[in-house]
Length: 261
Image (cartoon, rainbow, N blue to C red; front, side, top):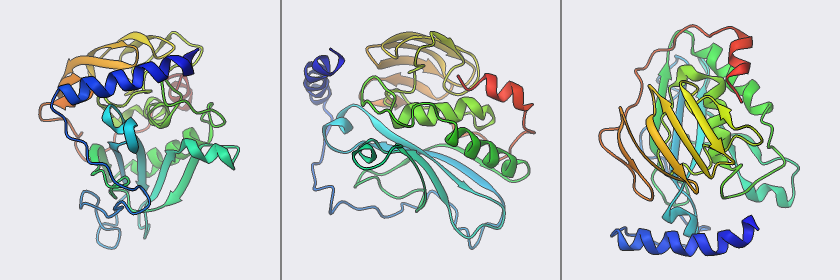
């Protein structure tokens, strides 16, 4: 039933987005640019540990209303970046949608320029990177993928953000799937702070010091917070908030695990 409803919902979203005056540039994904845009530090020049969280408009019609997100890490003295993300089409040949690989963290996502959601650097960040890796390998939906309402790439990024709340990730309204809690109804907000009530990612409310107040209806988010006004299709209107480049000491492992679901 969910799949049948999606056939109705996607065209409806597309029409609303077009009516709002959005411009979508169609291009062949095979030839689309993956070039970096200059948001990530060069590992050859920056030796300190760094974690960054990115998002960019998804490929094809999905990009009309949603983004694909990922987490990038560079341990102290590392010479390259490691990217953690979920790619749904991997299920065609793999048992897991979770991808851990080396690539440019700020590369365009099949032509779409990325946006930086979080940046942590320096002392204590190596500890955060270890916990990110542990959370990624413990992702409970590694053999599942659903564009709407989840679990998808944004569900994965929110899973990591809940496990490592020091990142203070404020995912935009276009990160559809971030509110998916599986069989749970109550949990922490996607940032790992505050609280969330969510019915299958289709209806819910989020309140936290990072996200502010958000209302989710059928996966579409409306809200207001420190980063500005959050709207479906648009994402965010306002300055956005990228946390200061400093990490706090890691919380006890038990507390981190409890915040992950």
